[in-house]
Amino acid sequence: MYEVTGVAAGDTLTIREQPVDGGKPADWKELGKIPANAKTVAGTGRSVQVGGQRWIEVTYESASGWVNAKHLQGVLGDAQPEAVTFQCGGTEPFWSVSLGRDGADYSDPEIEAGKKLTVERSIVAHGRPGIPFLYRLKDDKGNAFQAVVSQRDWCTDGMSDFDYAFEIMFSGDNSLMQGCCTIKR
Image (cartoon, rainbow, N blue to C red; front, side):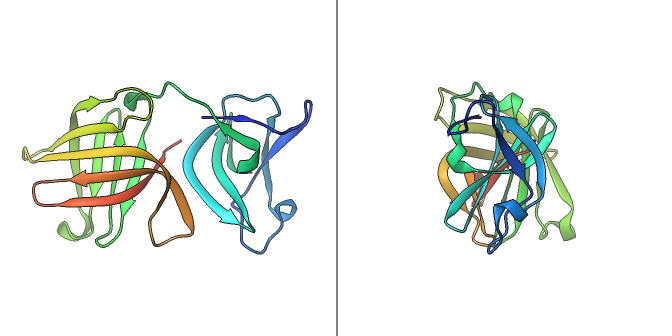
């Protein structure tokens, strides 16, 4: 969660379409406005550096898009694992997992030509702010999996220009995979 900072009272912070290198913010489509006193701007955990400025993907009320990070200040939220859904993925091999209140879905193109493996959360543990989210999971055959999602300065997937605020370590019986996550909004 973020609050708006450095925006004059009575003014607004503009939510824009995805920034593109070489473009000017004024040329990017306007998708919404955030009041200068807003304290509940929800970040997805995805950001990008464009023209020497960091832009953060956010959702505010019904608008989703990108705002200049210099106008946001992180605030300590009371997020519990049951209240968020993490969308995570990694490369080499390509895989993804969605972790949420109703369990998790794991996908790997090497598993029966992309067939999804559904896993169910058995235990979710979370401590104080800054402590990683821990998910203990089982598939329909009883195989155990574990996922640890931690907040990071910036996790890089190595394939895109985006940086991510969350990192995942995902393990099964014979594998340990690292990837990056966003919060699905």
